[in-house]
Image (cartoon, rainbow, N blue to C red; front, side):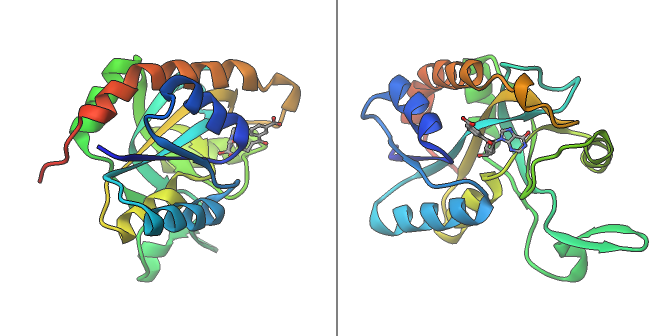
Length: 212
Ligand SMILES: O=C(O)c1cccc(C(=O)CC[C@H]2O[C@@H](n3cnc4c(=O)[nH]cnc43)[C@H](O)[C@@H]2O)c1
C-alpha cells in the first residue's frame, strides 16, 4: 500500500518519518484545513497512492483523551463549517451543501487502533483552536463522541475523497481542549507518542488492502 501521510508542521513530519523511515511519503502541508486540502491534493495529483493519513498533535477532550494519548479517528468531522443562527449552529449539510463528515475504513480503524493502543472516536477539524470552557462544552455537546480537535483532518479527507481514496486520521494529544493555557501544552511528549504510534501501525498500513 502506497501511503501519503500529511502533517501540518515539520516537527510532526519528522516525528512520523523517525518511525517509518522511507516507507511512506510524509509531508508538512501547513496549518489548517485549507492548507491541508491543497497540499494533499497536490501530492495526490503527482503520485500514485492508496491511502491518505492525516497525522499530528491535537487537543484532547477531557474524559476522552488525556495528554499523551493517541487517537485514531473513526469519524473526521468539520466542526465549524456551517452557519450560526438565532436558534443555534447549523452545519453546511443543513443548508443543502457538501459534507461535514468523512468515515475512515472501519477495519483499518480497528487494526491501527489495536496496534497503537489508541482511543478511537470522532476527531473534529476546527479553523480556530478552542480557547474557552464554553466553546469546549459547546463542541462536546454537539459531538458527544469527540475525542480530539485538530485543524487539518477534514481538509486532507476532502482531497482524498476527490481522488477516490480512503483516509485515516491519527492524533497524539498535546493539550486539553478548553481554556487557553499555552504553558500546559506538552508538544514534545505528544510528538514522541505520535512517533511511537507510527512505529506500531506502519506494518498495519503497509499490509492493509481496501475492500468494498
Ligand atoms: O509551538 C509549537 O512548537 C507548535 C507545534 C505544533 C503545533 C502548534 C500549534 O500552535 C497548534 C496548531 C497545530 O496543532 C494542532 N493542534 C494541537 N492542539 C490543538 C487544539 O487544541 N485545537 C486545535 N488544533 C490543535 C493543529 O492541528 C495544528 O496543526 C505549535
